[in-house]
Length: 263
Image (cartoon, rainbow, N blue to C red; front, side):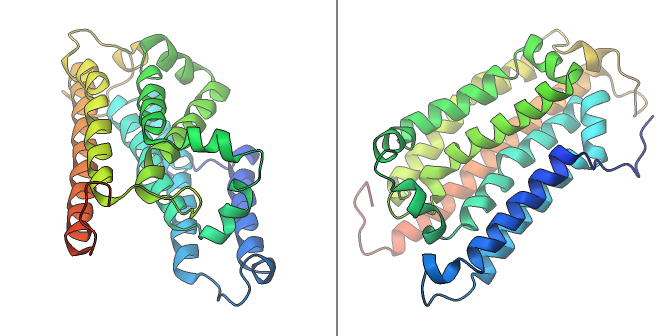
C-alpha cells in the first residue's frame, strides 16, 4: 500500500531543483550588479520562484506521486494540474525581465522566439501536448516507465510555460498580450481543452488499465468514479483558472487609460 512518509529524493529530481534554485540565486545575487546595476535584490520575485520549485517538488516528490501513479487517476490529475498551472505561472512571475532578456534578445534567437511566443503557437502547443499525453497507450507507457513519466512531466511544464507566456510574460522583448487579447486567448485555449476533458469524463470504458485493476483506496469508489472525478477536476480547475484570468484582466483593463481591444 502507500507509504505516506516516503518522499522522492532521486538525484535527477532533487539535483534539478537545487540547480534551478542555485542558478536563480547566482543571477539575483552576485551577477545582479552586471545584469541590473542599481536594482535591489528581487525579494518578492524570488519568493514566487522558490514557491514554484516547492510546489513542483510536492507534485512529483511527495506521496501524491505514488497515489497518482499506482492507485487513482484523480490524484494523478491533481498532480498534473499543479505542474500545469501554479508552477509555471509562479516561475514567470518570479523571473525579473533582466534575467531573461539578455538571452531572449540574442540575435540568432529573435526570429524563432518571435514565432514560438506567438499566442496561437503557445495555445496550439500547450493544448496539443496535454491532449496527446492523455492517449491511453501513451498514458499507460508513462505509468510503466519512470523515464517516460519524467519526460511527460517536463513536457507538461514546458508546454504550460508556453501557455502562460502570453498572459504573464516576464520579458520586455516578448511581452504579454494586452488585456483584451489576453481574455480572448484564455477563452480560446480553454475551449481547446474541451475535447480531452470530455474524452475522460464521457468515456464509457476505463481508459487506463492501471487504474481499472489498482487496489481500491476508498471502499465503493470504483474505477469509473475515479475516471469521472479526474475529468471533472481537469475541466473545473481549467475553467476556474480561465475565469480568474478573465476577472483580473477585465479589472486591470477597465482601469487602464488605454481601452482598445489589444490594450
